[in-house]
Image (cartoon, rainbow, N blue to C red; front, side, top):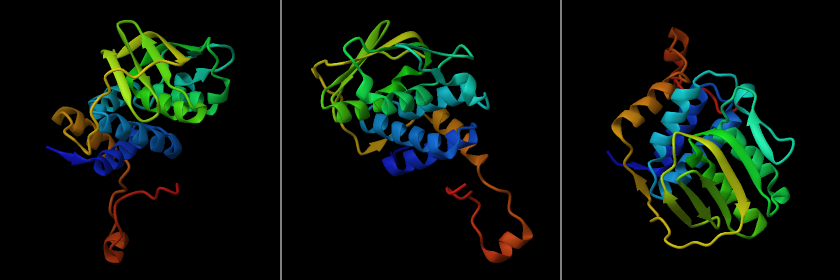
Length: 210
């Protein structure tokens, strides 16, 4: 089935929250998923793969230690959403030497954050991993090779050139199994109906202000 980017973003946000992310990072996950889908990648499969892998794992174990140029997570596997958010916060510190991220799950999810950094510094940003990489100027994306499920090392550096950019899409057709996984996780965010809520006609969703 085909879904609008708004539908992709909304489902991704609740799925990330259902997997244990705080609402703020769930919003980042949703924006990242939408950006990837808009750039013709199987964004829902990337997010579903990540959330299945880290479901309910402590975010502290997945977040990078940002001291120095090489970032690692205490739990051994680095979350691309937590790492991407940290990279965005430190965009001004991105030198030609770049940052090195170790044991990154689903590195494709770093691409939207690289785009944000490119917009902030006014030049393209390049991601490199074994067997491929990506360059983005904030709007276009040039992807080479394929993004693995787990990258032992991802290098993030300024510069690069856009050669063959991916198409821009306004809708996405996620794989049925990935879409089902996201909806299963999203379902966790819905409060069970009570007699009082039914009488008041309240919706099932949790407030985004939580």
